[in-house]
Amino acid sequence: MRSYPRNSPEAAARIVALVLISDGHVCRSEVEALQQLQLEHELGLAPGSFAQVVQSLCEDLLMGVYGGGSMMHNVDETALASLLAEVDEPGLQAKVLRLASAAAEADKHLADAEALVMAAAHQHWRSGDAAQRARTEAQVPHPA
View 1 (tube, helix red, strand yellow):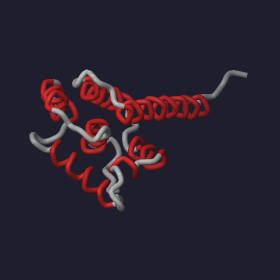
View 2 (cartoon, one colour):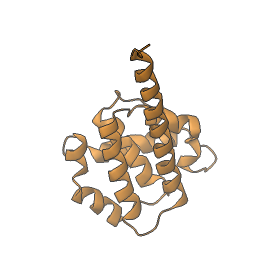
View 3 (cartoon, rainbow, N blue to C red):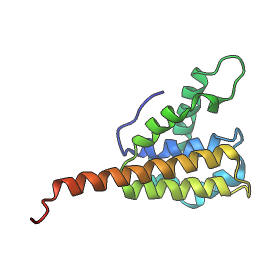
């Protein structure tokens, strides 16, 4: 799977795209919800480039599909953690979660795969916050 620069618009958009395609069906209401929220503008993508991020993600996932399996079959915990690690700026994480949640809920059905990706993002990013707080506290001298 290709990697993107940390906290880049593409890295953030790929997480939203993963939620979008995770259930194997992208419906019009999901796409319209993202358009209404101006996803590309919010994430700093060039106009029209979210479709390229989705296509690249699908290509990457299809490269590992053999024997008619699902594209999401190749996204195990390690792969998902790697994708989520490319977005570590809390403000950007919040935008991604808001946009991904809007896409997942737009069709009035939260599929198991969508819920799994969202839960992993919440868990991974919360644990990252805890690790960052611990590093910060370790650097702050404590009064004797």
